[in-house]
Length: 372
Image (cartoon, rainbow, N blue to C red; front, top):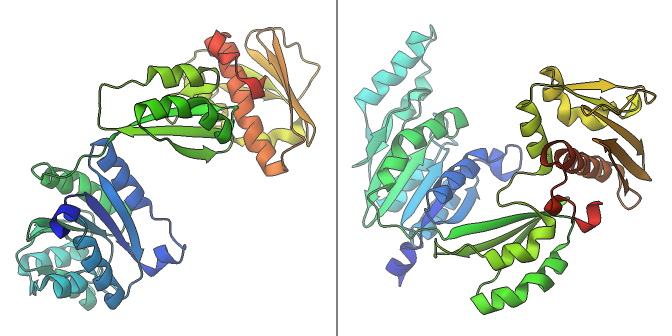
């Protein structure tokens, strides 16, 4: 049974009090998981553990009993609270062996920078017996790969600027020959203007026939609908047809991204006419403004008949309205608090401007019930 469970996939283990306490975002594991899933490797577990050897040994033992591959991130530094290698040594019954080549490289790292090599960094010159080192060209903490029974253990340093390049250079190649359960293909629909319960009522009969269930993720004001299948040929066109009136796209690209991407590829500027006191509501357009694609004018008396202008009026807690390209639209804000209003207005304006200036009012962009 244990062997069957191990075949399930990959576990990602991050170590550090700063991660568990919330002082530091665990961005490494996020990036690693994205790459692995994009390359169809099944990531089944993320775990974060404090810098405590007993707790870490327990976590490693459990993860190895359930996964084919264990990737650890962090805990390879020179201080007493860096316990990843000591914990792996204890669990796997492998000695920590001093590596002269590694110690020389650490000393050279400091010498090249005109710095004195701290004595404590000698603690980083140990590697697990029988492991293959991953040389760290950007720091002093080497990673490694250890074949343990029928499993693979990989250690990576914690700093993202060291961890991610090492993963790209070594780990992706190391995983290729392994027989690891592949992640199912993810089919995703990004929706706007419809709630989760309404989507359930729409597509559940279809999913019942397909013997599938959907996963949902609300990210205001959007909703992601996801299906997972090992059938790469399935397109789920019937589901798409049901969701078409609210469909933004089949990837995570929201309207503010679509609008900014489109505008940054245009040769002419777009003038936004908006009251000065609402300037902070448009900080998301600052990169485009800095590059000359957007010009803000705070005079509402300006002529907006030109195709390259859009006029905006906001009454906090009441409504937002905009016009451009011969169109005008208004939306209610009374049901949102101020922070939600800003996010809602950002996406609503992006939706309107994108459909007016870029899509030019194609039918499927005019069907969004809640965003008229």
